[in-house]
Image 1 (cartoon, rainbow, N blue to C red):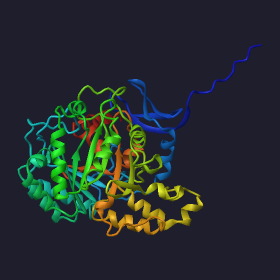
Image 2 (cartoon, rainbow, N blue to C red):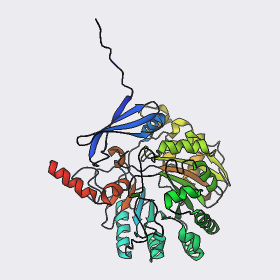
Image 3 (spheres, helix red, strand yellow):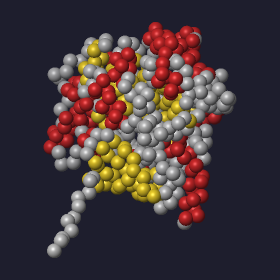
Image 4 (cartoon, helix red, strand yellow):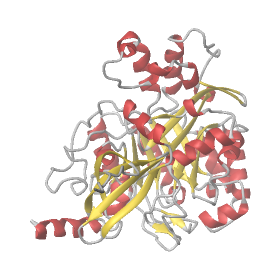
Length: 470
């Protein structure tokens, strides 16, 4: 008699989450499947069937992220009620689990470039500028929510071409905001030295978040539509001369510039003013010409691997999940002395890096060190507190020498920020989101939700669908 043999699944069922249908953008259940070193969401939509999307290329790192979860810090106030359910109540609504580590205010829609990749869909044709009164109202909404906001990033459009740009920046400096940044393509910084001198008056507590996608012509044309190598070089020279703290921000597209992670880090270390590099894989939102999820998506784990394979600055163990939202943000810190960087994370015992390990002896054994690690590895670290936090951490590790007169100049960080889109959306992770937009109406909305549902008005359609179904 022939007896049928049971077959083992070709995957490990690791758990369940709520994601998005890639066709209708509706909330759908998603299995989390592990196949070898890859992690997938397998979604099921009643209307559009089964969809399978890779969300991680490193199973070990994906599991490691769970060890870094910690209790969130709630905002002081909420702007909306919980009515329709996440992500349709932004925000922030009482269902959100994290305050604003970094808040963005878009002061205009106009830009002096028209990049093929732009989540805000800015262009020279969009002339809308927010007035000073509206912008102050937005700042006040943030202050009401946060008390003392950690970081406010002024963005656009291209914010530096707003006719009242310096007035806006000076207004922000009067508010109880710990760290002020401007998100810029660097065109004006490269061409106007007097403008750079004005930026220097905003120090301390000010930083330039400089778009810096590539050192190669072809990649820049693919991402920005124009060869910006000369512009970026001149912008960095002017920022270096004025000693303005700068973070290079790299939009990463698979097959376009993902081979340059190491080269860009090494290039950054050639400038004293550069405090670090932030890598952001392309998000499928806004203007994203010819985007294909199968060929263009670059995952956080792909970038993390590229960093330690292409550069000698940080090893794999140095690049750790950020506790406030571990699956979407990775960070590595080092002590910088010229071009030499001493990674901090590799010098700390592994168990002391873990932000939340139940039933672990080491958790209680070195509680003070654990808290200092968590404090340092926060997205909110800026030039007013990072050096102090680093010194505080190093005092717990006497075998590591502390540089004399240590300042923000001696800090070098690499950050990977993977914004979620229709492919890797996870309801649990969106509730932990700590990067938020402030709207002219005083709402504070997670970055991903704003770009996917609110900027384009899709949220109203989704609420309507929900009412009909109910």
